Image (cartoon, rainbow, N blue to C red; front, top):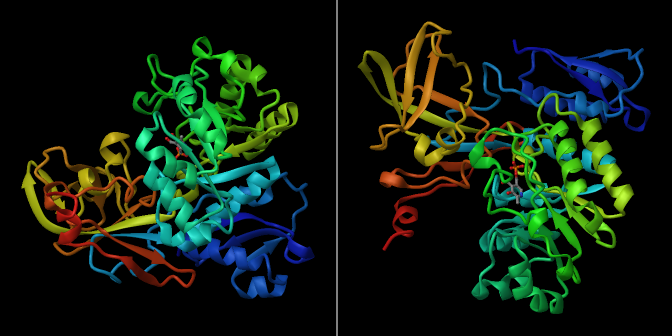
Length: 451
Ligand SMILES: Cc1ncc(COP(=O)(O)O)c(C=O)c1O
């Protein structure tokens, strides 16, 4: 039996109102069914296994957001043997949950919300994502093209430096462009304005709120964003927006601090502008994210400066919504137990090495927590191709399948074929829990990038 999932149901159209708790459901299934329950009568909801509880306490401002971001539990909510390994599987039920939260938060805050494709570019899902979000944002020309082709809607772009040869295509594809320097703005301004594009400048609030140096655009010597000292008031004409990106996997207290630092340095330039992009790093869909604060900060900027606020989350869109399923290929011993898998940290989950970050494994524990501990490594020559040390209730055997969690984001967009290791297939877990192959890769995908 899975743990109970608790949260509040929205009082949709005067139908089901109250707390629910779902037992005997996998978390994913419970969350998916909870959505349906909100469109059901109390009797139907109870028949579906939900306990409805009277809410005597006052409604919190954002009742739906009290839902925890679904955490995988001991049993995956899909058939892990459905496809040959390795494969990424994105669960539409969990993705929709994130999208619903983002839409409702954006509506409450009065802002527009874009998918940052750098984190998640599974374009077969763009039509679904486009039902909830206002468009896409890109960091490079191909992302821009993909967002434009596969979703349409608004297409934004920011690049540390645009190149002459790509700029016409960018103008054709993108409606909003953010520049990283006044030199680039001077260079491209005439072409961008003639094409009727809305242009903005990325600024650097010089206020760090995190310790991951590699992900801190406010670190000393940063190349990202114009500092207050370098800001050119004399070149403001034609600029319609400002853009700041400083956060990484953070809560809204970091946004509030950063917004204050931004206002102190750049608030005066917003007068007369049309938009402010507060970009990414907002972990809106994770448990315990302070949504009320996010809404308050965004609303206050919107009202004070009369600008459209954009937010472009990457992680939050597909946070905890996907898995990487891999198989044990060999078992070794060298003082410790070692398992070689058919997936690689270096090739298929590079953030595990770069961030660094430890993915959760369904049914796996910390080293030493359960009876049998293994170091899990990939099939490449890289000595450091280690995913981590994990423990299990029983000894692993060759052919066992392991399910790594939170593998939708910054995984398939960053993977590579180092050592000629095959790329994982990409699959979707549908609303019915069925696993469907979306795409598989082969030798040609390796060879095609080489010559
Ligand atoms: C310009 C820009 N937009 C959006 C994002 C998305 O950030 P996240 O995936 O942390 O939400 C990033 C992350 O680096 C970024 O640099």
